[in-house]
Length: 295
Image (tube, rainbow, N blue to C red; front, side):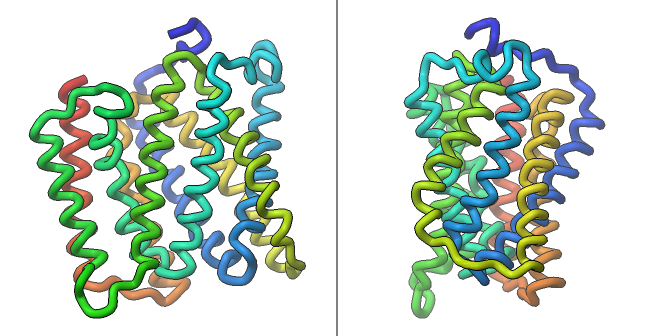
C-alpha cells in the first residue's frame, strides 16, 4: 500500500454511528426522489443530471486536496478505476428502475442482501478466507431473498430480479473499491467514481433528454444535493470510526425507505417481504459480527 492510501482515522464510534444514521436518512430521501423523477422522466436522463452534480463535487474536493486535482487523479490502475465508476452508475440505473417498477419497500428489502454477497465474493475477488459460519449465513440470507421474490408462486415478475442484480453489482463495486484501496487513496477512488460515471452516463443519457417542469427541476436539485450530502456523511463516518463498528447501522436505510414507501407512495408491506427482510437482516448482522470478530 502506498503512503497516499493511508488515511488518518479516529475511533469515535458514537459520532460515527450518528453520521451513518444521518447518511441512511439522506439516501432514503434520495431513493424517494429518484422514484418520483424516474416515474415521470427517463431514468437515464435523471441519473445523468445527478452525476453531473456528483462529478462537479468530486472535482471540487480534489481541487482542495493536497496537490490539487493532478495529485488526486494519479493512479496506477486507471482501467480498474474507470470500470468501478461505470459499474456504480449502471447499478444506480438498475436500482432506480427497480424503485419505479417494484416500489421502495420491496426493492430495498432485497437490496439489503448486498453485505452477504460481499462476503460470498470476497474469496474469489480478494482471496479472503470465508469460513463455514459465514457461508451458512449467506445461505440463510439468500433463502430470505427467495421468500421475498417468491419464484414459482403464480406468475413470476421478471422485474423482481432488478434489486437482486443491483445488490450484486453494488457488492462487486464494493469489493473492487477495497481492491483499489491497496494502491490508491480514498480521494483518488472517489474522484474516479464521479468523473468516470459522469462521462459514461452522459454518453447514454444525452440521447434521452426531455423537457422537465419547473417543480421537478427543484426535485432534481434536491436529488443532486442529497446525493452529495449522503456521500459526504459516509466519508466523515468512516473517518470517525471503523467500518465494522458502524456498518450494522446502515440497515436503518430499509426502515426509512419503508416509511417513505408507506406514507408517500402508498405502498404496503406484504408478509413475505417482511419475513424475508428480517431473515436477510439477521444473516447480514451475523456476517458483520463475524467479520469484526475475525478482525
